[in-house]
Image (cartoon, rainbow, N blue to C red):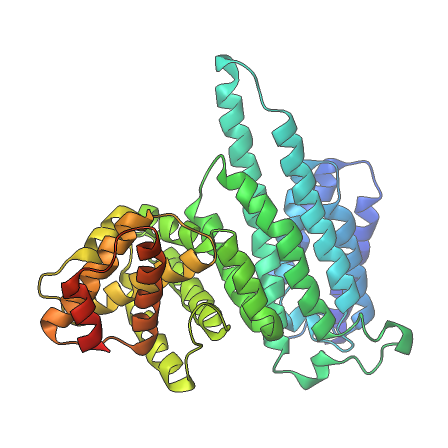
Length: 407
């Protein structure tokens, strides 16, 4: 064990020394070696048994990710991703302030690189190939950065079940508030909001990569767990920024059939948690009871993975009054809830007239089959009808009768 500690200390000292030299190739090779060691180390054998060496390693990576040479920064980001593993970070005291500084450096370098490319948009037809290459390079760097950030989020989740990692008993009282898991978790939410989300949204204006979006949505999903007291507020902000629409568009574009099943799973999981969070907040309809929430939770769990259609197709499916049963009815209920939650957060990506017709058809279909939908779905239907009818005509007699019979 002593020999192992000595070896990692030597590697860290060597990396620190190489970064002081004016040799890009040496920087890259040093970071490649370090990343390889971090990745291959078995989880059951601690690599860092001294928090001081772990701190020095983090500072070396921080210096490397800030490198003006993109190839060096890119290797440093990959090494950082490997460094953010629970077994590498669990030697007390956990260096939360150092981890925060490292993540800030990584995110700022990515933002800086993205901005440089945006400012250098080529002119003329001849440079379109250069533009495509630049977008590809930016996408790769952004993906690596997001993978590192996702590992930091995973670390925060894993440390929630480690009492010794939540507070640092060896930390000076003056630094106590900054050097806790709670402070680190809140930093992750803030950094995602101010840096990750804007970078991804800017990149989406030029390209959409399924792998990148899978990592990005898994980060958003994990933040609901990392900062539970902020999950409703964060969900409302995401819904108001059209994230329900964005996620549905990703599913429709990439996840039909059996393609991109991992992306479909992440999208469905994200939608599941954002829906439950939004439904739990007092809003346009009466908040559901625990029993009602449990019922809708089961509905969403089964129905969301089946939704891979574009909005017009989803509206048409919701309008289908032919015999609907089982999984198809669950899917209809999920579509209606998604339209409702998007609508009340000003994300109106379908026309009110078409939505009104679809909701009416859905309710009439329920009446035809003598079905009673979950209470949450029924309330959402009534709300959408009321809002759309304010700007449309009065309810027709058949629908009015159907509402009475269903309720």
